[in-house]
Length: 108
Image (cartoon, rainbow, N blue to C red; front, side, top):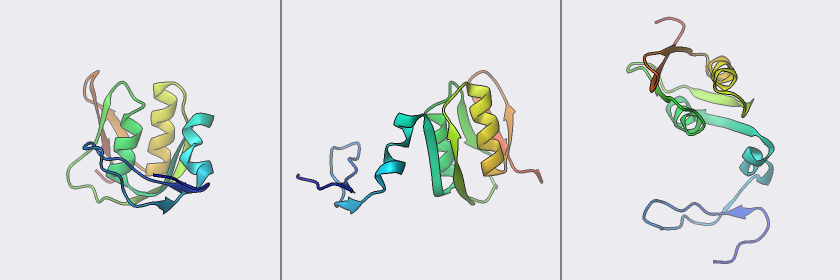
């Protein structure tokens, strides 16, 4: 498949390509500049993205609405990243073990 500048595709686990779509190159390559970008992303999807950069598994507590998250955080040490994510996602992280951190809303 041939792509032009500003176009992209996604590949699923089975190797199947999505349709060609226009992409924001700056956002798509933000990780290369040490940034994680959440652009109107559902909370659970943002949490999965954030978990890829953490040594602990992050999970949203059952019952919390899947609100929309937008913002950028610097890829740094684990604690700084978690604090930044908690601020933009408006959640409170509670470490359950070395392998699991649960995310609560302020009202829980």
